[in-house]
Amino acid sequence: MTASDTLGRQETAAPAIELKGISKAFGPVQANKDISIRVQPGTIHGIIGENGAGKSTLMSILYGFYKADAGEIFIAGRKTDIPDSQAAIAAGIGMVFQHFKLVENFTVLENIILGAEDGGLLKPSLSKARKTLVELEQEYGLNVDPDAVIQDLGVGMQQRVEILKALYRQADILILDEPTGVLTPAEADQLFRILGRLREEGKTIILITHKLREIMETTDTVSVMRRGEMTATVKTAETSPAELAELMVGRKVLLRVDKKPATPGEVVLDIKGLRVIDEQGVERVKGIDLQVRAGEIVGIAGVAGNGQSELLEVLGGYAVGTGDIVVSGQPLDLSGKHSDGQSRRRSGIAHVPEDRQREGLIMDYHAWENTAFGYHRDPAYSKGLLMDNAAIRRDTVGKMERFDVRPPDPNLAAKNFSGGNQQKIVLAREIERNPDLLLVGQPTRGVDIGAIEFIHQQIVALRDQGKAILLVSVELEEILALSDRVAVMFDGHIMGTRLSAETDEKELGLLMAGVGA
Image (cartoon, rainbow, N blue to C red; front, side, top):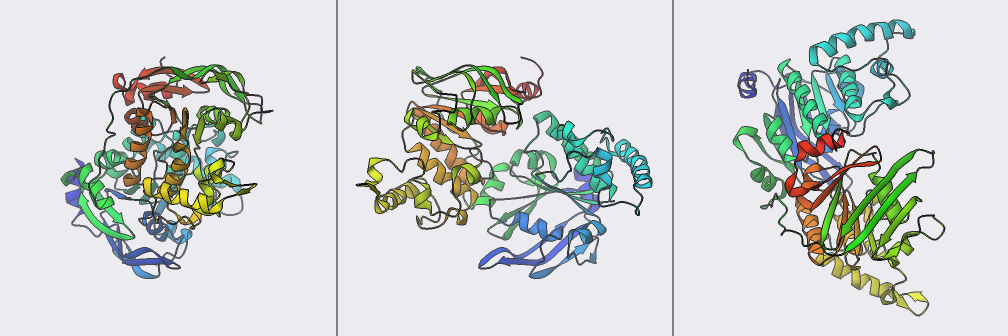
């Protein structure tokens, strides 16, 4: 039976989930406004929207994390009160979070029963869970070693454990929040095969993702949210990525990176034999060689945790390493004695870190203060021995205008901007310093589709000015769209380098999994 047949058959049944008039405010911010939605049983229902559209708040209400200010929830046609997550579980709802909720030093079996033990004796609970786990694995193709320790499993297997946890608690409705953010393409394909199997067995799945391709390939129906309201619900087969993007943003969006072929020049970044050992004594980068030339974007692809972050940290002056790194003909100090962010900036390096909130901004400080961080000794910002705060504010106003930061208020604290606008503040600060080399980590993580388009344009424009750019992203689509060359990291090694125009996600995915060279 096809997905469309399933959808047609289920439309005659009571909705698996029906939300009526859901509203939720946090102080003056109206996160959800009079939202109504129906999710048919045995279907995969996508929910998309920009940052701050209210998707997570709505799902948090359904899973009992928040209590709605107004509205009603119906499960299988029955009005249901969900004051907490235990009530959601009792109503047959399970949630697989973007950041897994597993105890890393527990086994798979121990994680499965955690919070769902039968009485005070653990042994009977484990015995029952093992039998049930075998049945679930066979029914849904979710094979996992029940005695494996979580910390020894890859992220794809850990995600299976989360799904098994929900199924063990007899969930008929599964909510998945950005489930492919940490998966290789092969792992993502396997996940969607599992979701298809769950749908065939009558489970109802809500998929929250910003990846329009996943929506188009996986879901039966998709709902679009914008500014706390539900703007549309459509059958996936009757829409397109361009239409969904326009519904999300309220305007037409270019869904591809518009760039000319690169014209690489002299080598700007030359890395030879770089090794990085972390504070626990684990070697994270294992003797890599890499070059980036002026006028090109080199992307580093790979599943998170394979050495990309440590590579950026050494280049940015945040970590120590051994080997040789030369930028614009000048060697970098890797020892940590004279290497820091200031020395890197003097070497012509600008850095947009992977985690903007922890490493790129001070969230309680004003936007104008954040635009000066790292460059506060610039003569343009000085008035004698003191900083010229008025000059910094004026400069910030210009940056906000050029980078379309909303609201364009330099006196607003960084924490009061959306994720996309926080990222624009960091990009404006770094790009406008005219660096020889720009390091960019996860440039559009947690950023909505409209801001993604703008950020990509700025990175390409810098490349076209003849600058060298090293890009790290877990998003393969982004890597292929932005990069001129792609290097794939696995377990601290560079598995291979490819021209973006001559490779595809399948080949890169194999390299990301440590297969091929």
